[in-house]
Image (cartoon, rainbow, N blue to C red; front, side):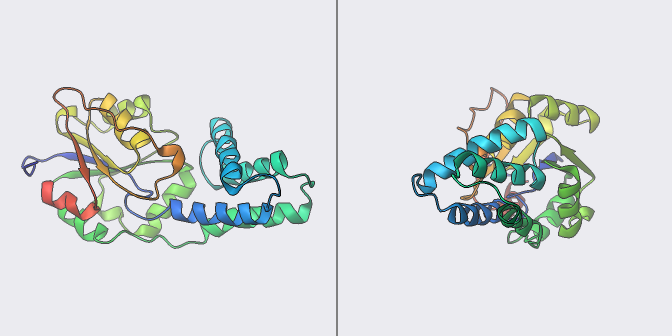
Amino acid sequence: MPPVSAAQTLLIDADDTLWENNIYFERAIAAFIGFLNHADYTPAEVRATLNDCERDTIRSHGYGLPSFTRSLLRCFERLSPEPLTAEKRQKIESFARSIAEEEVRLFPGVAETLAELASRHRLILMTKGNHAEQADKFSRSRLEGYFSAVEIVAEKDLEAYAEVMKRQSVSPSNGWMVGNSPKSDINPALAAGLNAVFLFHKDTWVLEHAELAVPPEGQKLMELERFSQLAEVF
């Protein structure tokens, strides 16, 4: 696709687009599965149960570490033949706490690419999750200076995109959503009338997996492998 010459508005995802995130959850999950050490269920079966627990917990409590902790505890109670003692609860909670202790590690070239993009286009951070957690990570990333606005939403669905587009005066004709999740970043953005850029990430959370939608007529969908490639097309 030839470079986009006119000024655009880029809505940019945060977790697993600007910095690593899911790998820390995967490490915590691996530690939990090892701790459970179930005699009858395989690690894959335990993970499938945890996925179900996470879906249920997200519906009632949203995203974030408190929700993730609830899911781990619920999964333990559902599968373990042993009771959830105070000691075991503390151990399970420590798996989730370990995620909060991780540094914000930007992907290669993110800061430099954002600086170049911000010189030509309007950048808006659009991420979902626990507001305090996401705001803290964004602050620690030291990327605030590249964005004209920050939108932290409870869920990235069609309604959320429509509200952000209205609030930020984003025109569908020159608006783009950039992210790694087909389920949250690409498909609902296309449904809202935006163009989209899918950035492949091999460790995208399994609950964010989905088939990429076909862009409606007149809209564009680009697929890139690295964040730095954005500067080649915008």
